[in-house]
Image (cartoon, rainbow, N blue to C red; front, side, top):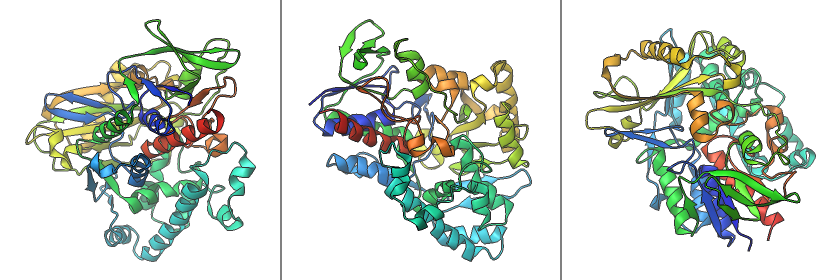
Length: 483
């Protein structure tokens, strides 16, 4: 069985490694950083522990399936703590809206903002459930290059019900008239590289999926999940080398021959999977003769603050999203290359769910502020932007800066430097209509046989569950191509 080498040990690369190992292949993973996980990494300072990227786990069944494929129980590796109420939304005028997987509580919250909408909430959930089941059952997890064959699996009813020809906001407007409910459910569009006013209505499944399957924190933080997946990979015999940077993916006569490490050592392999961002792979890892960069529309960058706070932060729960007065304008300004005047952002206080993530009586707070990508802000002076944004966040959440005992700040430039994120884009390629399914960048190369891709830039998309599913899909693709 042909061996495989994987460049990058993000969750997509680790998932691909596990599935390729289950095919009986020898698998070696090279990771440039000192720890695995990619965006889902960890900062540990003075007794505070911060997850660097994702702050909650959704779609737990995806991870259960990953472990069950190897004949193991997910629960033996990762202990999940339920987070419910899961998310609270807050607006500058004092309005709040909390999400819960408890239907009674959710209905009461919706009725509080839009009296009488209870039956329409149930209708929305049924509609979104149908979309969700159809998308994951027939579309998301299939390797299919032909768009007609891809949608050909759908019945006429399924095609008509997916909402792809309506915007996400219009789709939500079929069920809810209240602006706050629509803005809350539509705000997920920001992390897909668009706005609820231009993304397809299909993405109403994002809010539904979190409500239906809950939001969870692995004990020890999201990095507890990463450690569990790494442990599984190593137990299966995957060879993982950290602090080992790949300088290039080499080829001969249009076929991959292996990878060359930064120290000059050559590692031969007929199958190479890059878990590095796809545009970064094309521009930085392929030889000049093979490099044919494809332009991708990307999701936003992010400015992230990691604050170790003195004292218990009891004013907020685990996850709070602060939305602006002028909701649509914030999306427009991001597209125009500006940090919004009225700042949308979220805070995550993981120690509210797992106190071990901060010293006794203290709190660990993570703040994520969406920004334009690096190329959209070519003259950005982050030394000026960071304190300005920090002051705005502190004012909005009412936090005394004297309580910050530990601070680390990552700009989009830092995210790019640490993880090779193309243009500083935090979540990979955007999910526009023509960057989904067979229209999205393929998980194999058309120019170099034996070269494959995993991660947020390729199919099926961005987010922890998607890249884990993508690892399985690329392994299936390799099984079909290479024996």
